[in-house]
Amino acid sequence: MMAPFLVLYLLFIIGPTLYMVLMSLFDTSLVKEGLGSWAGLGNYAEAFGDPAFWESMWHTIWFTILTTPPLVVLAFVLALLADRVRRGRWFFRLAFFLPYVLPSAVVALIWMWIYTPELGLLGRFVTALGFTEPGWLGDPDVAMWSLALTTVWWTLGFNFVLYLAGLQDIPRELYEAAAIDGAGPIAQIRRITVPMLARTTSLVVVLQVIASLKVFDQMYIMTSGGPNFSTRPVLEYVYDVGFTDFRVGYASAVSTLFFLVVLAVSAVWVLLTRRQEQGL
Image (tube, rainbow, N blue to C red; front, side, top):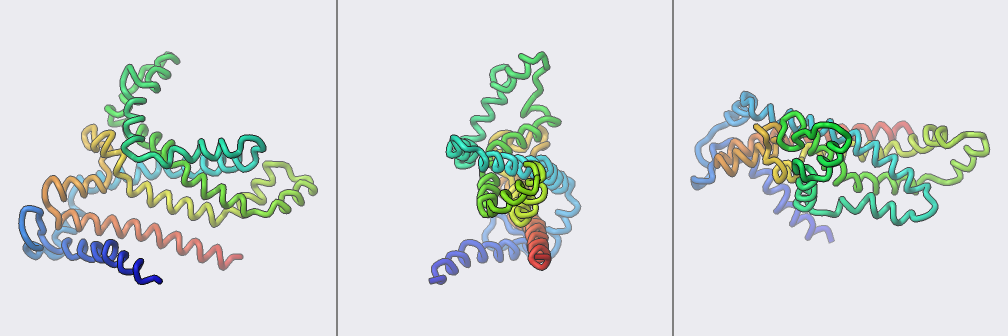
C-alpha cells in the first residue's frame, strides 16, 4: 500500500534533491549539455563570498522575523475568540480561513491594487487621517513591511485552524473546575489554555518559520525583488542565478545551503517535541 507513495516520493523529492547536490559540485549550465566541468566546493565558496547571497539571506530572515510573531499570536487570539463565540461561529471560522485558499497570484493582485499610490484603498485611508502616503512597494524601507502585511492577511488561516483544532481537544471540564475554584478568563487562558497548547504552539512556530523562509510567490509578483533588490529572498536569488544567468550549478549550491538551514529548523522542532514528551 505504501509503494505508490514511495515511488512518487523517490522520483519527485529524493531524486531531484540528490541531483541538486550533484550539480552543486559542477559548473552546470542551462546552455551546455551534461553536468559541465568539475567545480568541487568552488560553488559553495563563491556563495559564502557573494554579498548578494548574504543580502538575500538577510531579507529572508528579516521577512521571517516580521511575519512569524503576528501569525502565531493573531492566530491564537482569533482561534480563542472563534472557539468561545456562541452565535455565528461558522461565519468567523470561514472569514478567518477564507483568504488562505486564494492563489498567490490573486492575493498579489488584490494587494497591489490596495497599495496603488493615490488610488489604492490603504493610501486613501492614510491620507484621510492627515498622513503622507508612503511608497508601499516603491520605498526600500517600507516594501518589506508591506509584503509582510500581505502575507499575514493571506496565511493567517492555516495557523488559525491548527490552534482551533488544539482548543477543541482541551477538555471543557478543566475550565469548569477552574471557574468553580474562582479562576477568571485570563487565569484560565494562562493556566490551562497556553500550557495545553504547548505542542500545538511549537508546531505552529516551526511550520511558520519554514513557510516564511521559503517565501517567493508574493515577493516575485508584487516587487520582483525590488526596489533595488531590497525584497529579494533566497529563492528568488536562486531563480535569478539559475534561470537568468543560466548558472544551474551555482544555484544548486545555494539551494543546498538553504536546504540545510530549513533542515536545521526542522531538527530544532524535533528536539523541542522530544523534550516536551519527556516532560509529560
